[in-house]
Length: 618
Image (cartoon, rainbow, N blue to C red; front, side, top):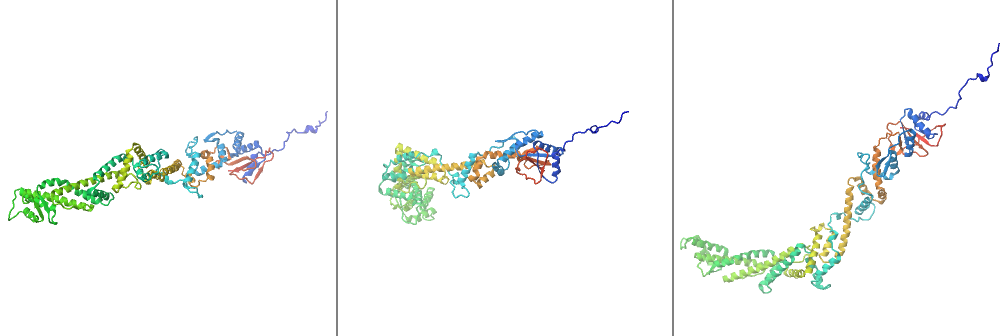
């Protein structure tokens, strides 16, 4: 019988699995255990285990958003976490990319954010695919506007006076085509002045103001000038050159022209108008000769008395010694004051003749009284024929005087279009004579007459029916030089007009540019408050970029933060529906808007690439 089998120690050994050293716990458990005490800086991991950390946090039910410092890191996170890459967008001119790329571009250009801060973001109602409105001005126009505003208002803090006058906006200036060149004006002036003498002669210079005035008449007046001068010449010739009547007529015309006797002449013309009745009255007098011997008797009233008697007798009435008619008594009462010859005043025919003669005496008395203030003394005539002749002669002289005055009135009407300071005087016959003589010289030669009318046309176009108060000072100076035939003055004034036109053009350009900014009052206010180069030159250099920045900022603000991976710029402080923010990976820097936690969770046992994460409760 055999004995018990011996079992070696090896046989008794129980088979076992090889025991490995215990590994580190999953990184998310360590992080979650320490988060109760506040935010953490997590170190000791490489890229693979940082992904494991985020996946573990999410697997534990935590809502985690990864905040990558750059768009490239955000793409790497998405790839590691198995998420779809973000779509690219054309947001504004020069701004293209995904949400985080757009945000990164905005963050990288803080110098362009001033316009967004000034105007606010672009209209959020615009379609998100639109690239935004075109800037109302381009950069060159903005610089031009700023230059013009400084020129008009000056620059705050600087002593240089403005160089643009705001009053220029409403001043009238002629277009360049309306100003003839200086050599042509000089040629016109020489052509006109040659009619009175050669260059440098005293007559030429003394006649310059009158020639200039007649040459600068408005076109209609220039056409009518020649006939008006001929009419005056003929009317003055009709006055005669010698004799008492001609001398008195000339003196009367001078007195009326200078205003001393205007009212007296009006009364005289009314009195002389009654002389038109004299021929009829003379025929009605027949052989009668009547003279009023009593100054208390008014001829006109006495004529009515005799008219009444003539009517009474013609109607069958008769004269009586007793019980006389009223008409008979009235005539007998006035007979002692009259000297009547060659007719019987107590007959119908005689009474009518006496009445007409008395009316003739009344006309005589009226004319004598009217002419006395004008220096014409008319002595009463005894004979009726002399009375008639004298009255008709005075009427003819009066008509000739009226002819001259009317002709001068026409001339004055032509001259009224000239400024008062260059209008030639017409207050006497000698003054009018100078105008007539000079004017007829200007109109007699075709070449001179053509030059005269051309210069008048130039002046009319420059005036353009505007009042002097509406005209620019330079335009008034130009007109004044033409109205004096001052060629040197015209050349200087024309240069000043060109400069004023440039100034007006700048002001109107400024107004146009300002009008294009009407929808952006804040931008206008900013320009009004500060127009310095230090502020605006950098803005002008990146003007279009600033508008794109504004558009992109508005677009970015409209994006909903639904992505689990975002960049620091695109986070925009929005952590809704998130439990944890994982920021990184980082080396030394901390992204803007975040603070470095004081507590550090170093996770040993994992490959370490030296980068760190911030794990922050949202």
